[in-house]
Amino acid sequence: MKQFFVCFAVAGFGACATPGIDYAARIVPPNTAAVETRTVDVGRFSGPGGRWYESQFEAMLSGATFEGRPWFRMARFADGNLSPGERAGIYEGLIEVTAYEAEEYTQTNNKCVEWDGLFDCEHREEVQEICLREELEVAVTPRLIEYGSGTLLFSDTYFGSSSHKSCDETYWHDRRGRYREGRYAYGLSGGVRPPQDMVIDALSDTIHEIRNDIAPRNTTMRATFVDEAVDPVVRADPRFEQAVKAGREAPLASCDVWHRLHSEYPQAPAVTHNLGACYESSGDFSGAHTLYAEAAEQSAAASLEGQAGEEFRESLSRLSYHRSGLELLNRLKEGRLNHELGEARQTDSPGS
Image: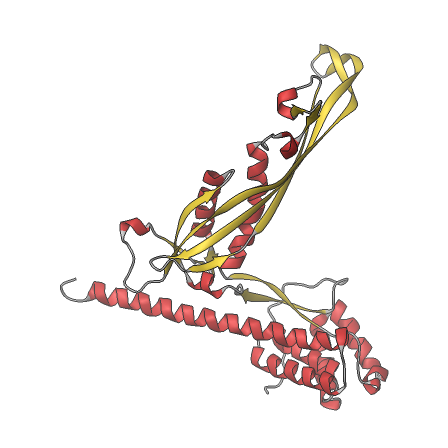
């Protein structure tokens, strides 16, 4: 394993958060079939606000970029503009209003009823208003269908919400509810459809979530430190607590301490793990993976169970998943490069 050196892409850290080092990272969502399907079209989203959602979904796909380049290529499959063997899919879905509730109440407001001039109120009175508080929840279930085979490649449900309050001096029966069985009922129970602007507001919450689940993105990750020493000898060493404290206040400086501690306590799970966090934040994922695996084995040998042992296993699992995503990105990047080179050769070849 190479010697550790301080060379980080650090985005910052929070003094009150779990101690560790933040670093710039490329994230690949777990549904790799959606990530790999980069030639896409948008079909119908049935339900309230469907037409609006279709246009917003297409705009999201068109605007999704990664490392400065568009991730998706929009195609109209009916036009037949697909390359031979190209994987393509169409997004469609269902929109549902899962909850719409309204509550009516009154309030007294001090209003100006007579003006003497601009911004000059001559007389104020207490005015009673009839108010309506509305709460709306929606669910969107997009589906990615492979073009040609009809195979379902991706499907998940996303939730959004919105709220609204309005007050008037007069009572609007039709807008607020329906008279049923001797009383007024509101929201869905009153047979009232939610306002379109509330539906659109709630649906807007879901667009960004879906984008993060179907395309890679640049973000900030945190390589966390374990802040409790398992080994009693290490726990008694004041440098462990000092390094943990430095991890909260100056995480980069603490890595020198973890490196020295690891040379003295190579079998201490917390020390091994925390040095692995330093390697991870520097971009040495192979070295970090080795150290996380060692820390997990050391914690198992120390018979750590439950939450104590889970910290070590979680770091190993998280980094394993992250490395798999990076390998996928490299394969896709290589495949796209080969595809572009092939197109360039066809364009430059005689007779083309």
